Length: 151
Image (cartoon, rainbow, N blue to C red):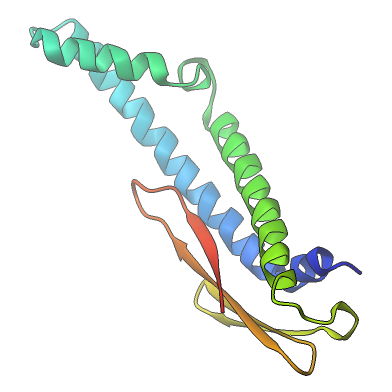
């Protein structure tokens, strides 16, 4: 089993939590964006300043088309695919960072612990020890995201 495969197996709880956070955020983001679209179109027919009108138009033009003719499931599906891609890429990057530490790949042992939504994985070959941990962030406005720190 490769290092990436082992890391993937060790971090399934992180993936599950990250995807769940992404789904909740995507639903709320879709609802907020739809509400903003309604407001922007309403302002189009009211007496608003030219600068506000053009600011709204620029934002509307940048939105993906599924906000206008799709439903929340389209947005959730796209955000989940992006989150899964981020997870896969972060595992690959983490594996490269661990390999640079020079551990003996044949003797690697891993232990993973969880603190709230963040994880800490300790990787050792019996001689060297590498710690990798996540920092997950997100909120009402900010899409859930995380990164690994390695020491």
